[in-house]
Image (cartoon, rainbow, N blue to C red; front, side):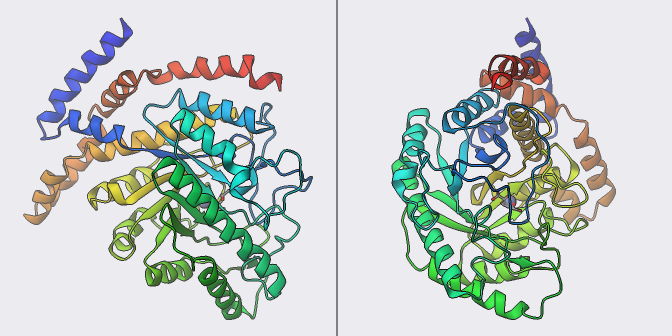
Length: 417
Ligand code: RNT
Ligand code: ZN
């Protein structure tokens, strides 16, 4: 009965959109090809599986101790699969190096090999989930304030070796899944207070990266992520936006845009068209910064809507990879995955449902009233009926009906941990 109503609403929406020249069936197909790369670290507050007792370092922080965080690889996989069952479409999983299967053994970061990720590779193949990867510079005795930009050659060597090994692991993942694995490099390197060595650290970072990226691989793609500041590293970040924009442009490689890594009034959406002209691809880390890089759960807010619209308008759909990156430990973590993933999809469906050709025509004709009026009207077009139909066709709960399902999983699974 409810399903019938969803389809009825969709059919009305379909006609409504057709009247402004938008084909909702085409949009539904595009949505089917829109794959998020879900970050494994929301499930356990960026803890990972290394046998260590230190907390989260490297300028990032996760607040909250809501019960039920995944404690091991089996729980994490179970949680991710359950979250994915409530999200329409097919999605990837983005792993960090600290999520390897070390079986209680201490495997230092410069010793990690593909064998520690074989279980993940097999799991990905069994569940038809493609993997992406990240080296991990934080939460380690050698993390300090500086890793790849450390003046101590021994520390640099350690992290270079770590990163090289991670690239090899990423390549093995990509080969197994016959689809390139994207490996993101983000290092926290920076300084709490004024530094008189900005140039030197950046030079060291550049040299370390050059060594890391030396070897070409077929089945992995590198991406580099910049940042404005970290907690305790407020004055200086070696890997700033300027640094990586220049670096990635020179090497013709991918850039990761984390929506929390810019000054609060800066528009990340506006970066898309510039960057797509100079780098081959972009990776996103969609997050929700509240006053700072707070990594709140992604929602359908203006900045995310703008970001996805700019990707669509730039014709960049196939050159952008859609990672999520938030970690909130104050609420049900499976629910957090579902809210953020569905919000990203809602932003994308709204972007795809825009009558861009018509708007462009107005713009070229100087009809700015019509352009603005239509942009406003798009906001209350029945995009939600199209999203509901997308959920229905993918056999996942429509609208708020996923909430009791998260609650059920909580009472049966996560609350018993
Ligand atoms: C940190 C970066 C980075 C991390 C993850 C865990 O500010 O956003 O991407 O969030 O690697
Ligand atoms: Zn990020």
